[in-house]
Amino acid sequence: MFMSDVETYDARVRAIRTYNQPILEDFRASLEQSGLAEKTVKTHISNINFFTNYLVYYEPLKKLDEADNGDVRMFLVDWFPRKAMWASITSVKSNIASFKKFFWWLNASSE
Image (cartoon, rainbow, N blue to C red; front, top):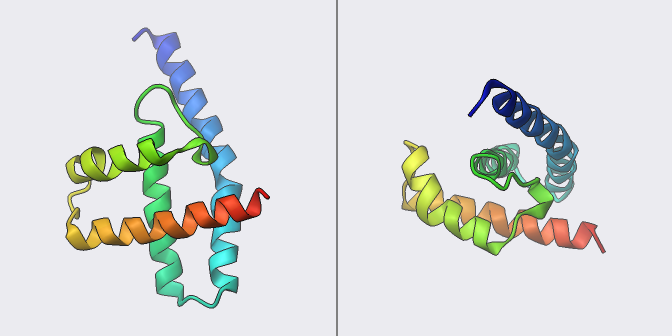
């Protein structure tokens, strides 16, 4: 990569992170309003936030609301076990629970 390519990539990643922030904040508010314990809310937000790193790790870079089931599958079976030192059966199950809640919420909020 040339320096301008790196700068362009970095700028795109920053723009996507800025775009994703209100989505994460709205998801957090929804979880809090649903009565979940703060620890559970933090876990779900942390899991989805870590997933956002995967979405900008490879081309094409994706915004959180552009992710699909293929992204989730590749994250869980390939990227997460390689990149997260804490990856375990329990953490994968936790991520699955977070994905279920997030994508249900995202679908419901877009209708």
